[in-house]
Image (cartoon, rainbow, N blue to C red; front, side, top):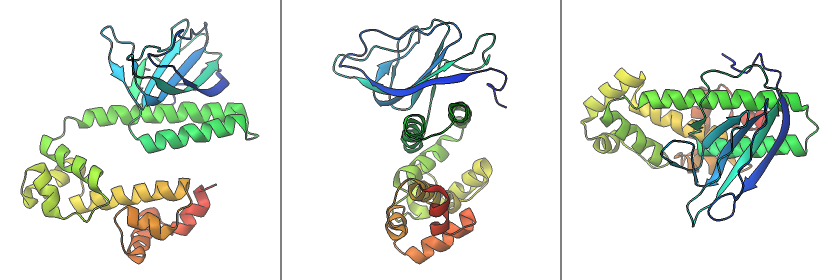
Length: 260
């Protein structure tokens, strides 16, 4: 569902802002019909809660119709954010859009921010197209954030096991390593993955490695052999076979399609 479809929004500005230590001396204020998104790229800033909460990299704030931007950081901290302004939101706003949510994957966050800054300032692209892409991506990340929040109800031992994989995917992990991290037996580990995720621990690990590899190929120019080694495949041929099975195309074809 596109929550922004019926709003005649116009993308007015895309940029970055870096605060001094302690935060901004003067928060920005939105006018009626304006929407301001702030996406924290570095540092930390206090949020908009009644009892202030410190937010870091990946926090996405939304302000409209006179609301003030975030501004306060701890005395020895600062924040840098991607700033996106829209105009033309009079007469409506998505009812369930929060003032703040978390963009979970830091690599995709920084890649998207760099791409949108490049598109807005240096590429001869239609601003309406850029604006729709930004709104769609923010909506996607909001839905992903909510889904991940719901996943917190997963079995705590499964959370320990998946967190271990996500932190150590580039290592030569055995099922015993993963089970030990989750505090369960190998057979119980299989049961947890099958019941809650619909896949085996090995499938989860392979998919993690290949998604990271796909992102690296689409956003950088490292040799394929180097990318393979960095995600846990010392044998490049094995990596290429697994990559083709997962993405339906070779690693080189994938890079040619997405890397610019």
